[in-house]
Length: 50
Image (cartoon, rainbow, N blue to C red; front, side, top):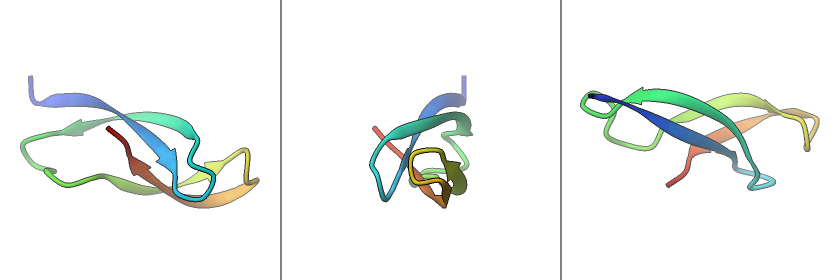
């Protein structure tokens, strides 16, 4: 299967807040999305972790 579950971590507080799916064949690099961080109480960039 090409889709894989990835965990998103906040770049500022380093906490793992979100999970999402990603197509490994199409997106080979690390996924980055701007999401709401409840610990920072604002929108921050969340990056895919290993």
